[in-house]
Length: 43
Image (cartoon, rainbow, N blue to C red; front, side, top):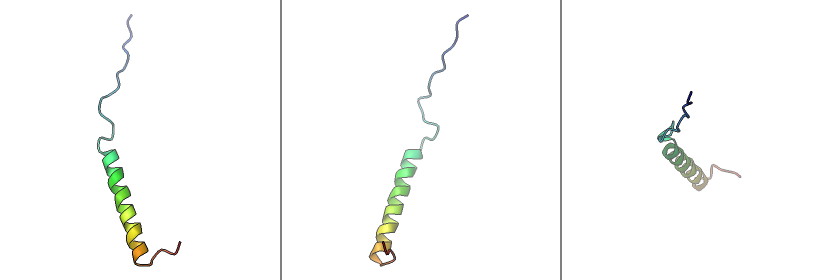
């Protein structure tokens, strides 16, 4: 009896996940820069 080997999907389970992560990272970076400009960060 021949066994079928499962093939990997060509698409990712989360198709927009990398783009969402980049957008979130840019937003967080912009927020930190803005807080630093206004003197809200005391690091």
